[in-house]
Image 1 (cartoon, rainbow over the protein chains, first blue to last red):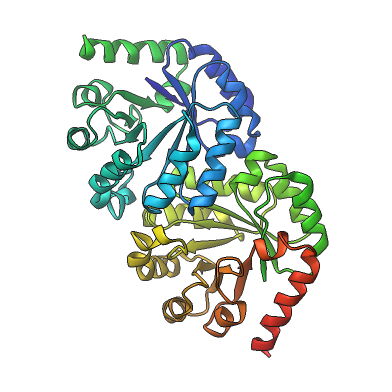
Image 2: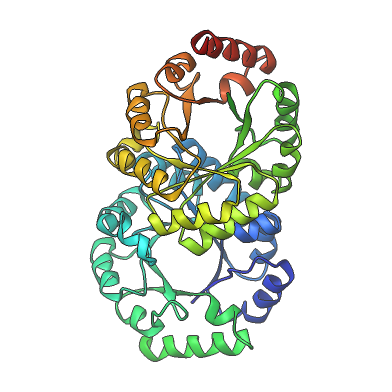
Length: 209
Length: 209
């Protein structure tokens, strides 16, 4: 299970990470935390668990390359990129990763994700395979889509956001083929983040057996 | 003219900004500079000229909102966002801007920009108008596209990257309807950034009359 650490307060973010780091496979952070603190947060959190920078990288090839290089230098183990900026941008990101995992967004779980990303999700999944990405992001809110993405990406990793507060079920997502569910508010917003994380880990174990 | 300050070295970036700040309408920065230094760079550069954060924001509505809020708090005057994450994400970005300018990417100037962004460019331009954005980004490398985008966006601002090192001409872009050209390497990579900036300003003046 991947913790989406969508806090913007430095001390709260560190507190949650320290509380649950041994229960999670990775900690996913996004730009708001970096902008409200500093890129040094990537390095600090990397000492507790592998960090995936959910930066939705979506630029020209040279900029994608520079972003991925900086993320790697800061100590992250993974980075999330968009494919809609084209195969050349995606390739530049994968080439710059040098062992770091690149995850490609297929469709997005919010309503606006239906407008442009959902109709292209399968094509983005194919692009992830062709570019040599480590995995893809597919929404737990639409578990049937995870199964379709799995049929395209073979043994690439599938990470599924939308579990918990957004309505997706961890066990459903895993049983449809997700390798890791991404859980945010249900953990960092809980009275006891550790107890919440333990419950979700148990829910996933009940399916994985 | 907007300076694309695509340096990742803090002292070089500040030196170029200090050299040319009075010649430019704004300084555009991107994630690599923030990741290699800190978000404080937004604030420091804002003391020299209006700063546009070219962050190609492309996330769910709540994350777009948080990114734009943080950019605003750091002192930027503008932010560049994608439209392909849907009308709800774009609206969240515009709503969070509170007077800061939001610019929407139409098509992108690199080869991969032809795959997904170019066919949707006109729709993205319409979305920019509907969302109440301040302007759009359209490539100077394809000046005929600027004229088309102008016909859609009315009096919204058009900013055009791709001038100089990427082959676009400042005067062509302006004569086709761009309000501001975005110039990077031709300035910050020049032996004298100030002389290079002065030449481009003169080139633009020759068209604007």
